[in-house]
Image: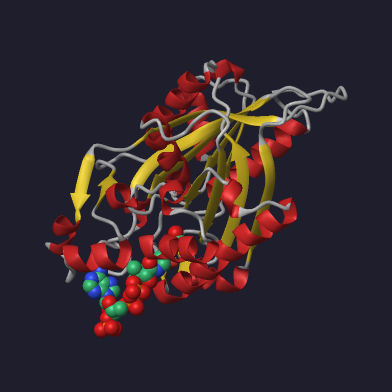
Length: 337
Ligand code: UT7
């Protein structure tokens, strides 16, 4: 991609959506066969009934490639037209090369700048901010975001406090340059990070702090202080949305659709209650997919679009939280091509 700033200021628009989940369905009962848990406990405490796991040997980029092609089809664009390819992921194929570079190669996005973005489960919202900023600055016209996660590969399947939560999926959106005077697009972002909470949700080993050969058993897997993350998530989701709406001088009643990161239905229900948004405007699918980190918000959006629940012009409030600890919210209009 080459960009020469010529004074043209475009508005970024979200025009395409797409998703892909692996075939293998793992139910709560399947998990209860090897750890001390039950379908009732998991449904009551999380809202999750089943999730998808990749096959042996399958990685995040394998899911991302299929989702990327679907997003391109939906947006009516060719891979060669992609200027920037962002893969938000907490479970990349490798530390490097980036999963984005691998996806770009396999879909034929040969002109694209490609990079991964690590903001835990807030990755998709952070990536939207990146894509919006690049497109509106004139640095490329078409930015493809593909959240791609194979979290089951980083999960300790003997740890009942984490193995019930996570699932694998890829999903994303296409952000393109719209017309100068367009009133559509991204109305604003509220993003943040608090590294003090980093140890509450962490894969300790496999980086430069603790190389794999020095790892203690279990340190190459996700470790989570569930209660702390739960407390953080319930607080930050409401605060982030409230700060964004206040900054825009808007009310929650103006929001057509709320899609929150799919971590736990109790976190989302708590926020719905505090914000006062009608429950029918909130779309979830974590009962079928669990927590798919960077893929979770666009996975809901793609399904909602397929079910006819997203209409052109709908104002969507998207909000995420996760490892970092990070959080982020944005308000965006859906403007399919
Ligand atoms: O994407 C962002 C990342 N993650 C999250 O947002 C997750 C945030 N946290 C949560 O969703 C919840 O904290 C969990 C679902 C992980 C746990 O639910 P909880 O209601 O916070 O349970 P808890 O950790 O307070 O544990 C309550 C009890 C404990 O037993 P004791 O100590 O009271 O005897 C746990 O050992 O539940 C036990 N427990 C389980 N029991 C059956 C924990 N996991 C399980 C399980 N099945 N899978």
